[in-house]
Image 1 (tube, rainbow, N blue to C red):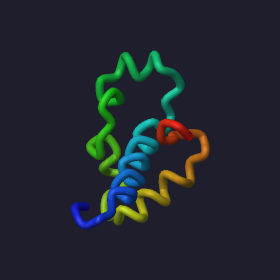
Image 2: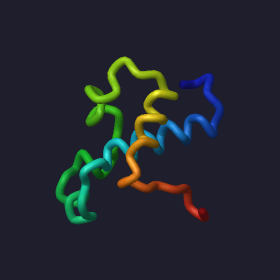
Image 3: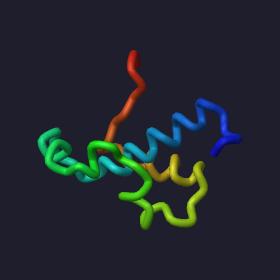
Image 4: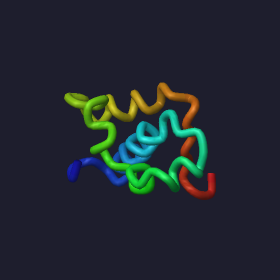
Amino acid sequence: MQDRSEADQQKLALAVLMLNMQGVKSAHEVVNKPELQSPTITRIRQKVAGMTADEIIALAAQNPSVRVAPAGR
């Protein structure tokens, strides 16, 4: 991932966040589940095993129920 541009790294980070938040119904759920408070690849590793960064980004884009946008947009 080091050789990816900063913009691509941000896209991948957002994709990991979005995939982690799939199925989450409320902020209350996030507060009560520590694994959701700092979402990492660990929670979704089986879902994304063998995928490239671009494939992970595409997978996250297929889920319209989770919306994440950088601040100011």
